[in-house]
Image (cartoon, rainbow, N blue to C red):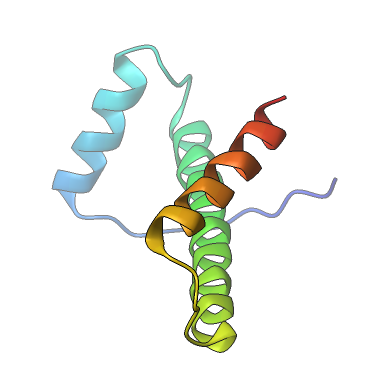
Length: 84
């Protein structure tokens, strides 16, 4: 994988925060912390897109003639099937 060097400008308050994260020992340097933030942002965006797609699928499916209990039971059955 190719790496690219980036230059960013931060306020002193943000710089202090990053330094506190690396001083706590969770990250070894600023770059590692920022890469972790980017990865978490990518994951969050991916989950948000999946949620939006599920909401749209629900909207597109129209009004159901099933009861809430029937819908809930089906959802529980699907969850159990996925959980193994």
